[in-house]
Each structure stands twice: as C-alpha cells, then as structure tokens.
Length: 312
Image 1: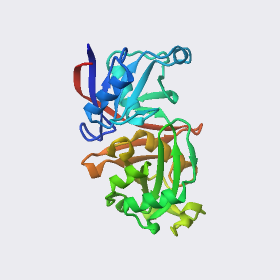
Image 2: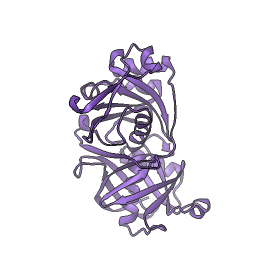
Image 3: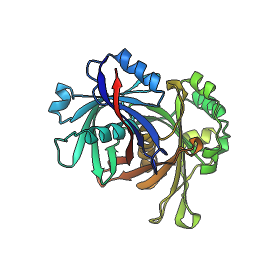
Image 4: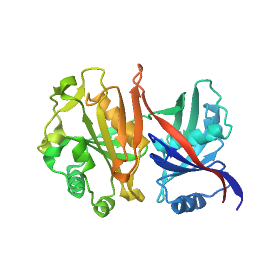
C-alpha cells in the first residue's frame, strides 16, 4: 500500500452535493484489477475511477490520460459522470492537454473528446448502437417498473459501451412516480433508463410517428418536439440493479445515448437540459447539445468536495 492523491467530486449538480458523487484515485499505477474493484466496492459510490498514463496506442492517437471506471460490482468500458469528474480532477491536479481546445481521455471504448466551456465540461458522446428490444424482456421490465402499456411511447436498446434499455414515457409525472422492484430488475439483468420530454402545449407540435415496439404495447405513437426556442422539460431516471446500483443519481452515459436516440428520431430538440436525481434528493442538470456536424455533446459542472490522499 502507498499514499495516493485522491479526490471525491460532485458531478452534474445544479449546486454542490446535489449531483452524483465520484471517487477519483489520481494515480492508479501498480494497482491490480482486484484492488481497484475492492476499493470501488468499499467507497460504495456508483463509480470510482483510477487515472493512469495513456497506453502507447492511446498516446500516439492524442490521449492525455487513461481512466478505468468501476461500479461497486463491475468495471465499465465507459461512463459519463466519471468521464467529466475524472477530467475535472486531472485538470485540477495540474494536467495539461496536448490540444488547445480539447482534452482527450482514453478508456475501454476508445478515445473520448472533452471540451471546456467556462466551468462546464462536455464530452463527445461515443458512437451509439441501438436496436429493438426483445418483447419478452421488455414485458418483464415494464412489470418490474409498475408501468402500464399506455404510458410507454417508445423503447430502444441503447449501447455506447454500457447497454441500457431506454423507455420514453408519456409524462414527467409518470417517470417521477415510479417505484421499481429492484430485485426483479436485478434478476432480469438489464439496466433501464426512463425519460420523459414535455413542453408547454402552446409551443409544441404533436408529431404522429409509427413505432413498432410502442404499437406492440398498445401505446400511443407520438412525442412532443420543439417548435420554438423554448427549452423542453426533460426528466431522466436510471435503474442499474444488475451492477449494484438500484438508482443512479445522474448518469452521463445514459443521457448521451438517450439524446442520440431522441434527437435522431425527432423526439427531442437538438439542445436541452435534462433533470435527474430528484427522487433521491438530488438536483442533477445534464446539458445536451448537438452541433452542426451532428455530434452530441453531454455537459455538466463538477465540484471537488474532498481533497486528500488514500492508502492503496
């Protein structure tokens, strides 16, 4: 064991201690996977990260540093709030990016670009693969969430490293009132993200859409999309019992994949702010923007709450 620089951060919060906490070990060299996993289990946070020098391949491709990301139960190939929080910690500890405008993080899914906008960091959402969910599994998840078929607008499997089942619901109220059976969700083995997009009716247009999985559940087909410059109301919740986290306070990877899906299908505007964590007493804010090239950026503020050392 040796003393290693350590920070505990709050990420995506509208104010300090209102977002998602993250533990960051700033020097993960010489730690085994088992040691990393054990410490992540001990911190009991949704994620703990370890900063490392980039691999030779990563360095030659422009990576500034490498990160390994662990939940209490498993290592993740990519995650959003650990990406922004780890970058914040790296910069605060004196990290200097090779490029003038962006920081490049290496993780298991590859290289992630991160840009700075004042105090806010934003990551470029990695490529998304999406597909129709298995209807048997979908029915099990719907039952575990206590949803009715008419409350579901659309469903997609979303894979940008982590694999989520995304459910677009009919209202924020529906999303906020969910009381899932987390044991059932753990047994199903599928992480689930729910989202609701609402706008003032006077500034919205109801677009009828054909949606195969929605029809299979007898749900209404349609969603409110932006018809003016007014921002929509977006609510997100993330249920991840299969990896040891019943509900994650604020989830960057899920918000990234939801944004790519919803924007591409015309179910959400190209820029919005998502709220997450209210059912856990948090007040998360995730800033979504699709740029002119079609790249979706996911941003938020990180704040250092604990700064010191850890013996590992």
